[in-house]
Image 1 (cartoon, rainbow, N blue to C red):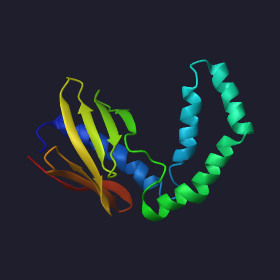
Image 2: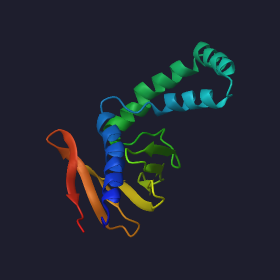
Image 3: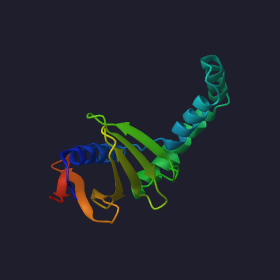
Length: 165
């Protein structure tokens, strides 16, 4: 349940960070395979010249081009029709910084839900589970209690329900 204003702000940042990409990728997809090729290219070396040479090889061979074609014709089409990108990996983690010094670490699970750990500026931790439903994203606490639902409100992301305490 909401107990502090800081948790509400952290939850708001998490919900917007999760809902907006979901709402905006329906048109053309997340290009996850192309991003993986880019991530591989970045991981080759910390030296920018070696990464540049690797980039040229990946363009000439044409790994980037093949990845984009697979994304456009297959992965993004599957994502458009099913809502799930087949290239998304369980265990993928993203870190987002909030406006009040909070840090959100989000990890994709096998079932498509996202584990969120909110580290507040004062060191407090909150654990949330974000679950995508047909028409919204739900935030649940560690016990599975619904904290909030975010979905489409007049064409914009908006709060559909919230637990108030």
